[in-house]
Amino acid sequence: MKVTGLALVPPPTAADLPKVTPELLASVLARYSRSNEGIAAIMAKVDLANPEASIDRILKFVDYGHASIGGLTGGLAIALDGVSMWLAYKIFEIAQMADGQESSTRYITMDAANVATAEELGIPVDLAPRWNDLIARSFAAYHAEYARLDALAVAQPDLVRLPPDAKPAVATRLRKNYALDRARYFIPLATRTNLGLVQTSRMWAVTVKHLDSLPHPEARTAAALIRAELVKLSPRLTRHSFAEKSYGEQARQELATSLSLGLDRLSAAPLADEVWVHVDRATSPFLTETQPVAEALNHRANRYAQQGTATRRMRVSFAWNNMAIAELRDLNRHRTGHRYTPFIQVGFYLPPEISHSTPIHAALLADQLALTRELMQRGSASYVYSLLLGAQTPFEHSTHGDKFIYEAELRTGMGAHFRYADHLSAALRAFFEKVPEARAWVVEGTAEPE
Image 1 (cartoon, rainbow, N blue to C red):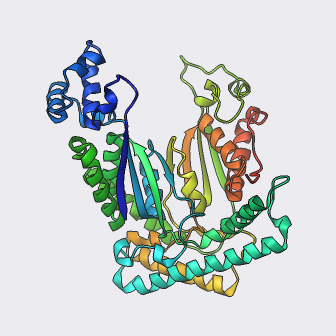
Image 2: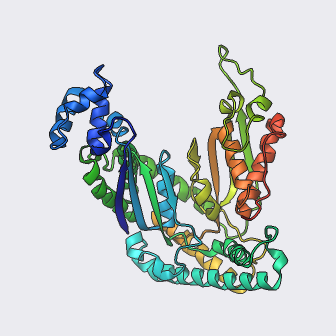
Image 3: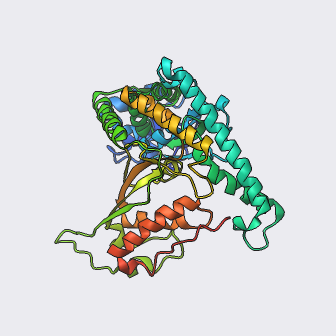
């Protein structure tokens, strides 16, 4: 695992501000909030040749809590190379105010060499040989299915939807995406990926504190490496980034819940689709909502346009019983509201083009299930690394109506993965039952290729 601090992106205010360090920027803006002198007058008192003394002087006067100042540091960019797909998922779950990107499964190495060692991931020593064997066989299944589906798409071109007049290079790319998007459910969650995030020092401190409080060795290693980079950019505020009792206790309880639910529901059989949507339109008696839903939606040119108060004030919670981790990794990145999953295997999804009953697949999934059960019975947090991307888990997201509509339009729109579209289309149908007046204005796509 490699962690690198990339850049500071300060907000464009006074001409001198781009020259300051993140902590000096934060301290200057904190002082600004307790002064009527104006930013230029405050900057005139700052010695840019000795910013550390200026920071200490200002913070001594201001006496603000670290969180309120940490949020003023501007965007600190950190890149994490070689983390597991599980840790990338977890960081996106924790860092809900960050902007970030993760390497696509279409571009990372699909090989057992691109997985951390059992020791690094906390796999019990006596189970490491079984785990290593599972990883190797999972990649073998992925490559075999990818090759088979790619050849099938060549022999039967109608299997792949192509844009009109698609050029040969585009047709080849979409054919290969067709094969990868269906074979990917065999990819181990332990596979290494890369991600980069941009967020303030305040949110980095929370993220690192959370990671340092988890029971997974990989998470604590990442916390130490990220902290080492943050110290270079924001040393005073980084001191608040160590493991803390409340984070550790909640992590302990969440793991206990996952182990209990996981052992009770553990299965390799595919789980049929179920969706749940709850809409709450209640408003206070002194601020009743009078805008029709149609008025909130009908002025939009696309999903990025502004919606009205009728949907912005509407609370929407939605959940699926069987979100495959392959889809969960992306739907988890919608930052608004709260997302929750016990991260268990209540079934295993394979697309219609791949059979569960093929002897090699059935044997692989049986062994994967047995290893996951053994790890869970031992109470090991490392059970997550025995999961493959086809493992299905319940997943819930609570947010507001405008954000739900945006996500539904995005995840059924052009270029959307076919399984995203299935899940979001089902959620939209349930939403329309509760808010029928939105049906005419929400653009449900058909996941056309791009």
